[in-house]
Length: 275
Image 1 (cartoon, rainbow, N blue to C red):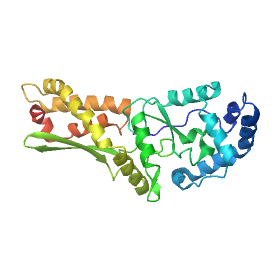
Image 2 (cartoon, rainbow, N blue to C red; image 1 turned 180 degrees about the vertical axis):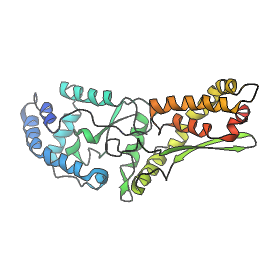
Image 3 (tube, rainbow, N blue to C red; image 1 turned 120 degrees about the horizontal axis):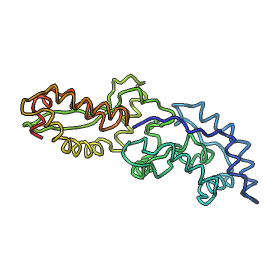
């Protein structure tokens, strides 16, 4: 899970690129929409973290169809270039941090909010799995947002994802969750808890973490050595943690599990030998 800055796209001026080579009725409709776009985009930005409270604006049926058609014109050079910029800006899905981006998710769905079909802030590059889950659950639940908005929600400086370790009969039990005392607002904590639940991130992260710990056991065992050097093991884990923190940020499954292992006295004092 990760926040991102917006790509360097000047809006609403870039909307002109989507009109430039259009003709006939489509061009006329897009020109009419272009006059309304500055208001719509300001309206979206003004809501900030309350973006879920935006009500659909009243484009005509014909205008809604035309702007969605423009977005879905995947042979248009302007659209191809625009999509390429967005995907190049965010290579890994910000919702899960696991997979490459291959879909553009409309945070406010274009079926209801067609006026934001080509608004960069509303277009989130994501993976197919997260995109599929998002479409099934929708963006709002009980009057509040369900998902992280990578361009609006600032989470990178807060330790929101946590990994927990417990031991049962000398077996290590892992699980992931949301840190409710991470320094963000309660509203955003609630969003992150829903985000985590609906995208089933706990189970998805656990699969990666379990394999990672198994793969790392020889390295950690070497560090621990025949002399049972817990300090050497802690240093080895800390090194891996610092690498993960620098590469992925603190709200990544690998960073979280390495921090938990480093701080787990049982693991560092021989528990690793039982996994």
